Length: 329
Ligand SMILES: [Zn+2]
Image (cartoon, rainbow, N blue to C red):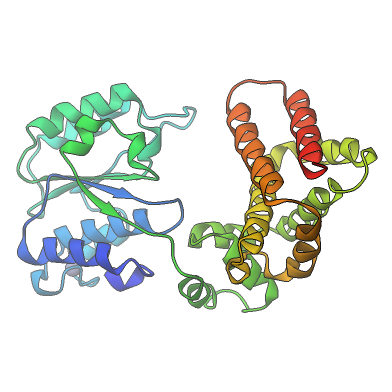
């Protein structure tokens, strides 16, 4: 029940283990990496290591401190949580959940660990409130902030933190993890590839009854845009019907296009959609690499527009039309 629970990411584990062993712990860490690769789990295990009573094998997983930490009931491990009805973590939450705790000496262990699992949604105000603490932190306090990208944090926060990078996992690492819960069949392999190195994403897709249908429909829709113009409307209708899951559909589209770009570049062995290779090779014969890249970029733009408050149907219609035109040179 220690760092070996975390799949892959040996360098990150080494940094954290050494910090515990040598008792040289920074006041703030930023765990950076895509969603679903074990950053929060690593934060939990690191915190456990800091409070563990068996310093030689911390975290031992069996001492009373470890057991409390595993049950999320250790008084020296504090989680900064988002309020239920809010989309971000504001200055109020930092005040009520951290400021009220951080100047109290540890109860049971040498450290007090503050874990911010959702660093991406820290407001600027919240970060500035944290910064005030990080400028003169109590010696026993350690913060762990998990983010998908350093860009989510202010430079001033980053400069006071030690960044630990977490990397996407290899296909072998993901499948060996998934094997514990899922049969290693074509579906599991497909979603392991589609997850792009994220165990969280792979598990989410595998637990989703509708994911395979959505994947098949998405690939079919994209291929239709190579056919005559009457298909434009149908593909737009498909995207309108799948509005709730548009982020996944766009993911499926872009992954397919990226695979085709790989094939065009002589790197066919790198494709994600192995089970669509035949369709892809045929498709690639009729579409230029430039058109594939253009279509890919249009989808990136489409994603950005969705984040603003645009007219969904109009944006879908325009994007689909443009991709159809790209495909027809
Ligand atoms: Zn322990």
